[in-house]
Image (cartoon, rainbow, N blue to C red; front, side):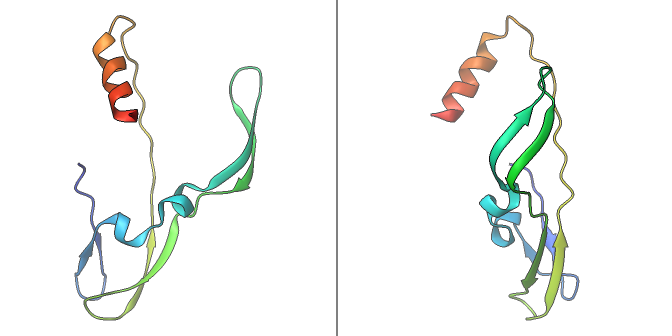
Length: 93
């Protein structure tokens, strides 16, 4: 698991992102996705991602703001890599 921490700027108290962000609000909830013939997103209808949050620190009781900087990295999988497909299937189950 990635060791990402959110730190209170007032007192240094640390949090896991899951303590502050609500997953459904964080990723949004699209109700409809429209793509062109090449698979590129044209537009999204629904609630967008919410990358900003405010939180009252459990350590010092001061309010602070958090902004998530989100990136997704992709890579190719060799066509004959059966173990990757089986691993992904087990993760979904």
